[in-house]
Structures are given as C-alpha cells and as structure tokens.
Image (cartoon, rainbow, N blue to C red; front, side):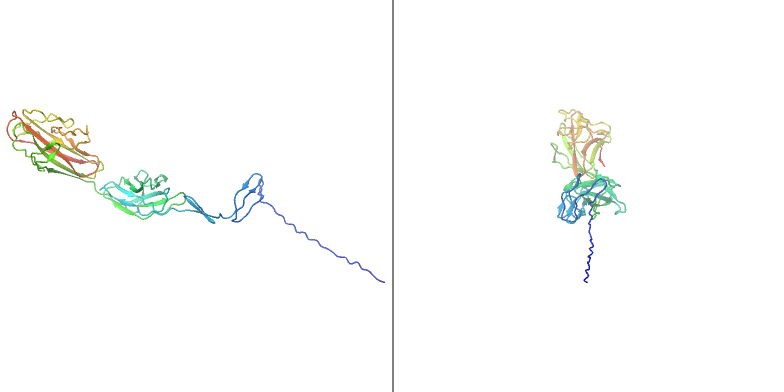
Length: 361
C-alpha cells in the first residue's frame, strides 16, 4: 500500500524597512541638503532656501582686509612697519620731525606711534593732534597720508634737551594689528638766542644812503660836523635763535643827546610809531634813526618801508627788528643820521643807546 506523504515547505519572509527623516524642527523642515566641498544649490523648504554648502569653500578670493583661501577663511595681518624717520631738522627745543614708513601695508592701513624719553620704561603715544599722551585711542591710529605722508609731521610739546625714541605699529581692520617695529631716536636741544652788534664801513650803501662814518660794535664817531651837511652811520644787529616764535629787537636811549654842560642836540620830529621824513631845512640840528626791517611786529608793520623815514630816540623801548620764526644770522641795520645848523651851539655831544634782543619761546 502506497503511502503518500505531503511534504510541506515552510517559507519565512523578512522585510527590510529603511526609515529616512529630513532634518526638522517644530516649525521648519529642510527637505534637501548636502555635505562636502562641491557645493549644493536649491535647498529649499516652503519658506526658506539654503544657498550654500556645509563644508569648506573652494577657490580663492581677496579683499582689502581678508583673503578667502581654498579650504580656509583667514584674516590677513598687517605688516610690521619699518623704523620711521625721526630727526631734529631745525635745531628745535620743543618738537621733533617724523615720517612713518608704511612698508608693505596698503593705503588704508592705520598706524599708531609710541614715544618714550626713558627707553620705553614708560610708553606714551603720539596723539592725533600731534601732542603726546598716555592713552592710545582709536582716533590716534591714522593712515600714512593722515600722518603727513612723505613730508611727515612734528610731534610737539616736548621737553628741551631730551632724547626721545619712537616706534610704529600697524593695523588693517579688526584682528590684524601688528607688534611695534624698530625704534628711531632724536633729541631736542636747549632754547637759545645769540645777538651781536657789529660796525659798518663807510661807503656801504644801505636803505637809500651811503654810509659816511665807519662804526664799531660800540661807537659811531661822527667827528666834526659841517653845517647843513647830513652825515650817516650804521650798526649791524645780527640775531640767531631757535625760538619757535622768533625774536624782537628794541632800542632805547640812556639820557638825551647832549653836551656835558647839558645843552641838548635836537631830534627829528618823527617817532617810532609814526616816523617822519628828514626835514627840508635845519636851523639848529636834527638827529634820528631808521631801521632796515620793513615788516615789524608791533604797530604799523611797514612804517619804515620808505627809506626816508626817521624816528627820534626815546627813553621807552621801541621795536626796530622782528621775525615770527626761528632765524640763523639774520641782520637788521640801524642807520643813524645827523645834521647840524648854524643855530646849534658848538661843542662835544654824546649819546648812549641800548639794544635788546628777546627770543619769543
């Protein structure tokens, strides 16, 4: 008897489910995104689109303050400035001249200047108004052009007879500031003025007249005078000073021009503030002075512009020389003119005058 057996086959089924979820928050869902350096575009949701990648930027681009390098975002540091020019180029006692060297920095780079008179044991800073201060403010960073460019500028308000050092640092935007570069040094000097009185030889032409009498530093010997004859003599006044506002020369007399017995010799009618021309006719006498300085600092500046302008000496000091700037060996001439008439008493006359040179420091 045959037996038939039903062979049952059992099948087992396995289902693989892959669940993918987009990045989302309560309010937003990013439906597409990518990673890498190749770039992704058009990543959108109903309200937003992501125009970029997650990863590192490729290529290279540059700006004034930053370089975008392949794979990295970096800020470019400014270049450390070389040593600046620093000098006393005018015998100054209260200021020094400097020129910033920008080095390889571009025109929009800014520079700060440190200054010290004790080898940087103490550090001060050149301020935007060129004075010296203890605090470095943002306004004290200036471009090469603002620091005077190739002409440079002066740091002012310094102490006399002192050695200073300066050094410069640079920045070009945020997080780009350098350290200080090399130092330069310069020194102020002592305030000074020198003044001398010199003689003038006869035959010299000055201020429209020919000098008749040779003078020395202390004497103008007119000698014997001839009636109705004008005689001229002169003194050379030489000044050198480093005074920032120049100098002034004044003159006054020690007693009048007279004989030992007291008889005076007449002066011209003009005064220093209002000089006059030489008198056309002299009965007794006329005596006065003229200065070669045609631009004085007090009163009417050009009152002695004309050669024929004369003033009498007085006991009060009046200006006969002036300059508003430092000078080296500047010469001012004082011309003395005298004429005697038949009505003047004979005899020996003498006169003492005083010149004073004052520096305007």
